[in-house]
Length: 124
Image (cartoon, rainbow, N blue to C red):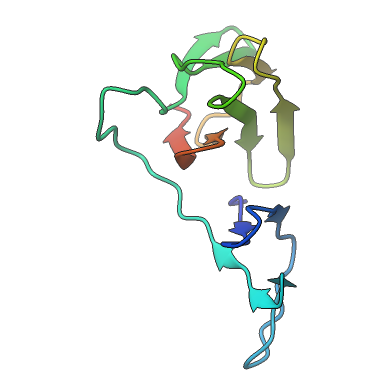
């Protein structure tokens, strides 16, 4: 299972897509415009850290992101996607960017920064 997120370029609203419309000139809209798919980054490009780091602890993984958690800039949520499961932990600026999920080799973890978007890593 892959995580598909769409974003409104006007108001920054986010939606998680379970099954998007395949019709021509159709799909999810917001503020009168089609929402855009948010691509997940998997390489760091700046001094700010966004990539989720996975630590395997027995039957669980600890997913953390070494990122500031300030009112105007923070990790909004961390997610785990497997072939048939999606788990998500929502965060507030005062939280630590960390989540615990069941260990599933080959799954993907995601972190969403309110400013720099979606980031992903594979669970080894």
